Image (cartoon, rainbow, N blue to C red; front, side):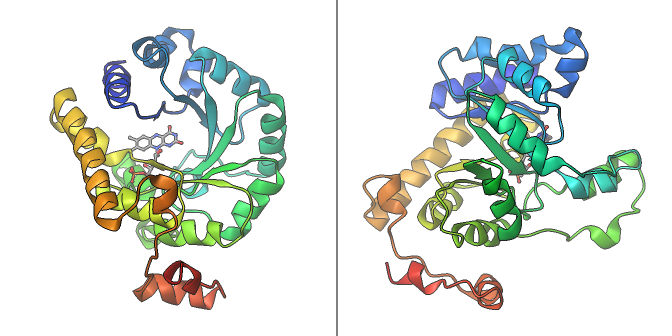
Length: 279
Ligand SMILES: Cc1cc2nc3c(=O)[nH]c(=O)nc-3n(C[C@H](O)[C@H](O)[C@H](O)COP(=O)(O)O)c2cc1C
């Protein structure tokens, strides 16, 4: 309740979107509904996203959106995290069909997202074919839920899997290479205004941050988080000014050089990255 209240206040003050965490707890136990509802109360006109597992039944998806009068619903995919949990899900069959059902039964947009392991272009194509037009690639490089599950259980049984995943920039490029009419959200390890500028220059229309915001809020204060968000927005403006970009759409047309391992990855996947350099 306290965390969502602060996040909503900071979102309102800085005019940024906010997503709540999985609402399954609030759907199963009416006693905790108010810990989600507080986000809408604090920011009545803000852009607020509901959140549920992509395997959740469509009627719960409708209820999650209603709970906070959400402007959209994030459906998360977290197979590696579930597998890292001793009592996590093991059966993911029917997930794509379920996403299609949810997307067609809601009157707000659906965003399908990963939680830090990234999405391949094959997965993104399947999500597109399910009727979804917003994809948050939730790439590797930030929050690592295999490592978090190990910490929670007090065991380190998943050490061999700790580096599993597709890095954020790579996953974004994989998705963009499809050239489908999709809106991309970049998240996973973003921390600064320069990170945001890079994502925007590649073609993301939104970015998401969890870890760095929660760290500022929980290790410091709501004021510290406010300063962090305002600082990121300032930094983004500086980078755009230095790049000669008038707005985010213009930023997405600036030449971008992709080098090193990311370039090598794209080369092996047959994805042409020269188009970014020759814009
Ligand atoms: C404490 C914590 C809780 C999270 N809970 C959820 C969740 O309930 N649903 C979800 O879709 N993603 C959840 N995420 C994942 C984030 O939405 C995001 O995809 C991921 O953390 C990558 O971004 P980051 O590196 O900025 O943290 C959570 C992340 C953190 C740090």
